[in-house]
Amino acid sequence: MSRIQSSPSFLPPGTAPSEGAAAPAAVPPPTRTAQCRPASSAVEPYRGPSSGPPPALSVPGPRSGPRTGADNQFDFGVGGAFPPKPTGNLMEQVRQGALTAAQSEAAAASRLMGESAAVDGYARIHLDHLKPSPPIPGAPTSLTDYTSTIPEVAPAQAYAYFVRHPSAVFEAAGIRVRPATAVLVDGAKLFLEEKGFPPVWAPITVRLEPDANTLHITTLDGHPLRGTNRFVFAEDGAGGTQVRQYSAFQGSSPATSVGMTVMDPIERQHDIWRAVHAHLHDTLRPR
Image 1: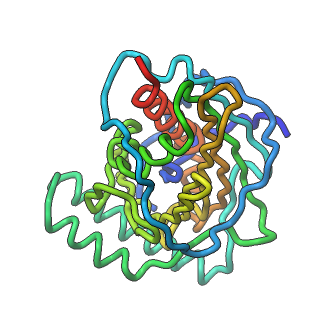
Image 2: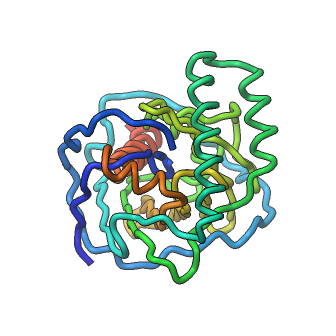
């Protein structure tokens, strides 16, 4: 598989995008800076929650510094079907599109209200009604394999930091977690709030595997993408950690195709995960 040049599109990934509303005129995609290699491993779909206590480790809190992941060997490869296409039957796509639009309106209100107990309360109620929306088996799926390293840091420590500081991890990429969340727990449901135009609430659920130092993120109903992200924190063979992130996604509604014509959600997705990997490196690596 080889790097796919993405055309202007919309929506953050995981996202974004980031992880369903009117969009501005097309803008040129950002300059690509990361090198890319062929993706070599399939992504596992969401398999339901499994219990497990948070790791009992002492880990540092969030901190800032000048590194910005400069020496974390961040790399990624793409494969599968690009650009992502809407999947599911027409009724399902209409349902997903309606939820995306409603959640975009809530995201706009959240941007105006800022840190608000009322917004967090609404988010909790709304999330209760959303179900996992992983890629549909057998349908064309876009794949991305991200990797980075954290020298001199054990995998369990890196995993524990992600679990204990989710807000700091995502804020490094300009993403706010709604409702406000101090620590990830198995089965948690959250919105990742993308502040772009239009703002987006991208709903996800989390599954934790502390014994394997693995964290799974699966999109929920109304996310612009059907997708999974699996973060595996493993020994790098040199006393540090290799962070490997397997991403698989499809479009959830016609909004995906509309977005692909006016913005560049694929590049935004790469930028979000690049920032997440850089934050883990810069925070955890001894100085």
